[in-house]
Image (tube, rainbow, N blue to C red; front, side):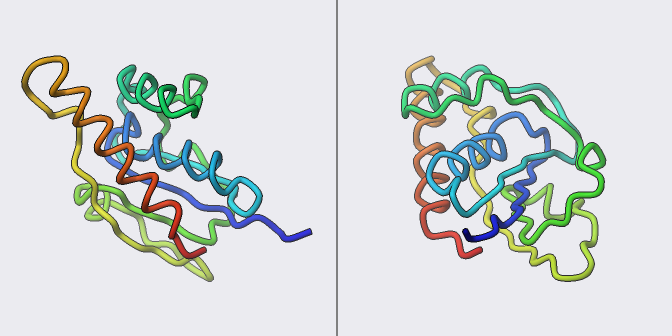
Length: 137
């Protein structure tokens, strides 16, 4: 049995992008990744993120927004910042922890019709899915 790698996804509010990344990592690669998510300034879980992930067959409805400090004592193998703000505010990780950055657009900032906003959530969801598929841990 292969030991799972602890992977933390960080964005600003831990409301959307990092939550979707955690959901995809667990869903697509749960046999090799123990996925976590957190934020540098937690907000609340985006209902639209929950909705578009559910459309793709991934349930993140039980997730909740948390601060990086709410995950003490976990030895992360990889930390992924998924927005520029989180990259700037990300704490320094010591030891074996590898830190990478891959910025995704924030669909919570989309302005327009409901259809347009939801299309932005779906686009980002799919971009995150594709990133998780090839993520090297």
